[in-house]
Length: 323
Image (cartoon, rainbow, N blue to C red; front, side, top):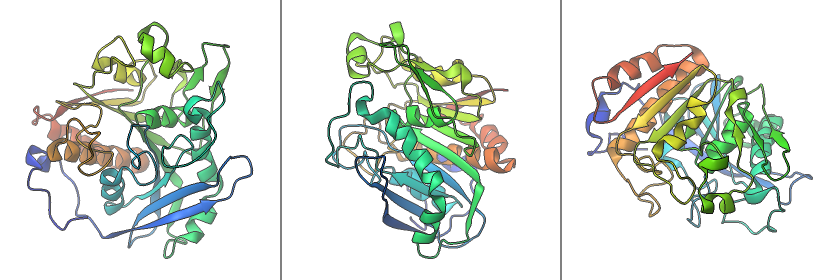
């Protein structure tokens, strides 16, 4: 982390945030699991001081990079959240291009079912994780857990928040809701399936048919208004907001003006896969998601203050909410 803001942060500096604290990262934490083809590797990023620290489980996207679709990605988010009081835990899912594993069986493409199970495995082994990281033991608040995910990771996060997926090939429903997770942030997630998928989309994600109507946990859905994905959907950027539009409240929707699928660069610093790299857009996502998570877990005024600030910063984005 820097001791000062990026010089190109622009108007995002007007979204309020408290001073950051030093952080540290520890990896890999290896969880041996008999029900998984490979042991589960984790990375923890945490504040160097403080107690009763809340937890964020961060699920990576798929992407085409060799490293960012693993625990090595999403440093811009993980470090920012940690510098403001959260312990961020990142798994390397079986879909990662960084590991060698057998191709997933039909019905579990991209190991999408295992991805959700990984988040539950982390919580089932949270005492081990806490004891493994030097200086972390006794500092976690295990009653305050949130989930976040980008792209395919957002689909993963939605499942543990209560959404279910009904595979159109056999009609079987899959759900992994976990009541230990109190809130979530879905970043550029996939929308509705069926006729909203393009021909290529039905080939790429043949399992994809989410039911957001049962996703009742609080969540912030973050979308870029230029995130058009014809390789997946016949619709425009609004497709990524389906998890807001089709789910019950309480939900909030943050539109990032000018944002594409990378939302300013959340997956990694100077990443080639980011088409909309912008320190200003990235800072907007960092600050708004932080404010949401603080209010969702603690009930403070951070989200109200961030929304009020954004009302005067129309060049950055807009927020809408429903209860």
